Image (tube, rainbow, N blue to C red; front, side):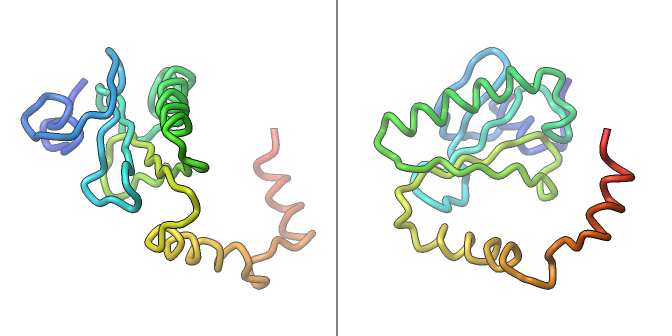
Length: 138
């Protein structure tokens, strides 16, 4: 399955160049064109799936992601953060950001996320928590 308008499908097919970190029959790890940190990598399935949750073998996908993470750990990185936000490109992808806690760009990005997490106004109340549980627990 391939989408002719998808940039990641074009990378998989070779019509757009990329910097390949690693690949197997099903997945490809490439350097992100916009580096948060050195070696910021995107892991994509070679077949087109709109989100990671559409990929039929999520365990296989994340096993490959783990290979990349283990590789970065062996390279001496203390952390390998991941993001799976997929609204900019509608092809399943996992961002892998290796770092040692000393990247000012990544720290700036994390500060924004941390600000939301520490915002007391966003804290779940017991009433709201119970309402959400009633709807989503299984």
